Image 1 (cartoon, rainbow, N blue to C red):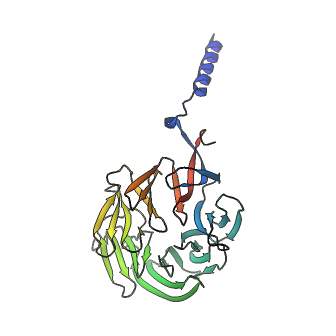
Image 2 (image 1 turned 90 degrees about the vertical axis):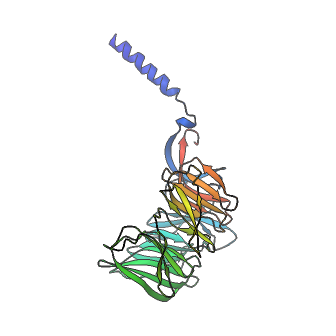
Image 3 (image 1 turned 135 degrees about the vertical axis):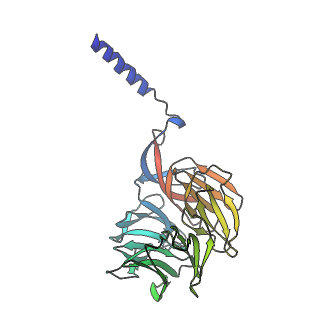
Amino acid sequence: MRYIKSFVILVLLLLMTSCYDYSDEGKHWTESWIATMNIDGSEVNYLFKGDMTPFYVKDLSDTTNEKILLDYSEYIVSMNTDGSKQETVLSEVGNIVEVSRDKTKILLEYNQDIYIANVDGTGLRNITNTPNLSERNAAISADNNKVVFVRNESIIDNYYVISLNLYDLNIDISTKLFQEERNSYFIYEKIYVLQDYVYFYRTYYDEEENEGLFRIDLNNNENIKVYDNYVNSNIVSDYTDVFYFANLSTQSVIEIDLQTFIIQGYIGESKVIGNPIDLIISPHNEYLCISNSQKNDFMYDISTDEYYYNPRSIRDASFNSEATHIVCVVERFFPQDF
């Protein structure tokens, strides 16, 4: 009798699992895939399984076309936008820190040095070349001719700016901006360079309780505070009028005037976007891609103040040059997406 009861229970369990509801509410996360899609999240094209960071870049053999770079941390792979013709263009070079605004150069960090190269892997150069020192937190300027990084010397963090001609990769000038003891405060990792200014976020209180967003003038090293509150994401800008960053206390993206530093608005304050933690602006400032801590994605149309909500769990998005598509890492649903 006991065996009969066990058999009946087993049959019931099989029936229950075979009738599982795979509606929207019953979807399960499964595998990470590299995919392209329209900016509103439609027409998803799954390229292949993986969670390496993708970037849209120029095809240097025909700059009217684009390719996708995949950052595997230790090597870089180039491929067509449909996933075909994959080839390794750089190996043992660390990870991509940033792609230049014109999508022709990449900035990399490897073995505590900063490297720069063309997106096809040519012209690789170590622009710091200090084997006994540690450089990190590199950022490339919007005009493509400056790189800022942090150099650690003992307990001192020195902030340098290097002026570059990114088209022949010759170093013109290396200038120290300032230095601070690391036990004084912590500098937010995502430094932002715009025109003749460097923006950075100071997090912990020092003796003067100087916490907030600061700007350094590269011409005279003037250091001023431009925002007296938390900055909870990277900083992006339209390069002329405003810049954006996330503030978790308001659960919104703050828009600030570049000249007056007056807050122009709170993007998403009236929307349910959760806790924004990552921002990407399209090449010609049409859209702002906002990712939250739940890995949901919102595409914000800057000119129309409209939102596109992407219900999929995505990360590491990159716009193409025309801002019609993104490439990203996306979680595929089972069994609907297979």
